[in-house]
Amino acid sequence: MNYIDMHCDTLAKAAAQQKKTAGELRNTMVDAKRLHQCGAKAQFFAMFLQQKREENWSDPGLAYTEKNNLWYTDAEIRKQMQDMYEVYQNTMETCSDIIAPAYNYEGLQCNWRQGKVSAFLTVENGCIVDGKMERIDKLYQMGVRLITLAWNDDNCFGHPHAKEAERMQLGLTPFGRKAVTYMAELGILVDVSHLSDGGFYDVAELVRGPFVASHSNCRELAPATRNLTDDMIRVLAEHGGVAGLNFYPPFLNTDPVDKVSRIETMCEHVKRLVNVGGIECVGIGTDFDGIEGKFEIADCTDMKKLFDALQKTGFSEDALEKIAYKNVERVIREVM
Image 1: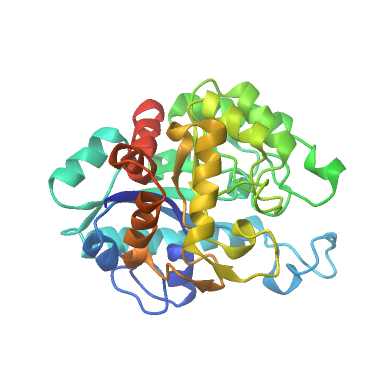
Image 2: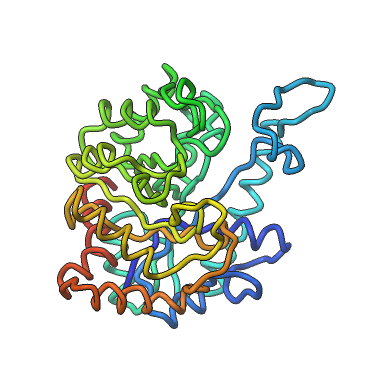
């Protein structure tokens, strides 16, 4: 079955491996060739931006000081993005026979008629905006059509998910509130994956149309703070938004120590999303190339296994099409 995946970190992985394109890669879960072979209709490619230096990620409580220099500078973050953007551009040029950029619904359908996968460019972690509204314009001009507002650190938009209840209630900054409103007007999808609960509800208050949780699951089934509560799922659905099923074991499993990503558990999350928010609020957001574990769906060529399993649990062909791509298509049509 054809599908749209709202999140992968392949650009970051390719850049880290010093590859010039993501056309054909080893040791990744996604590349342009495999996407075309497996019938993907569109892939959202994230430019993932790191704020903290990797060796310090294990201690989120560490504070910034000039002495230990835990944080990347603005120039370093912009260099991260430029490296991934070059991989993206080179892929679009060298693989133009099988994949092409898309900026809206019309472009998506045009690429599909030509037998090409559509590539939507996104940013994961709005820190690159740095409190400057003109940077949102620049990202739009680069082709970015979705911004995941936060990752795992505070930034100009607001606050990330957290284990501490008081931190989890923190919402958007004053700039974040203005920026989210502007993004919605401009036609950039607002993505609340990684955002605090307070930030989620601020977005829901500000954005009238659809917004997305591009790669988040159900907190009632897996207690990770990255997942959505039932109330959040309902609010997302009321806005016409979509939650993308994430394949990362800690976001699927009740036991966070369980490192196996199972298709059966994925189906349970899909069923809960449907039962709580309705069939219109479910999509795919694999998080391929940004996750680790043991996977029953090891890369994009295995995606058929998920849809076969969902069909066996009782989902109709119409429902499967909505989950696989039609719900996200609708959001693209309404927002971009």
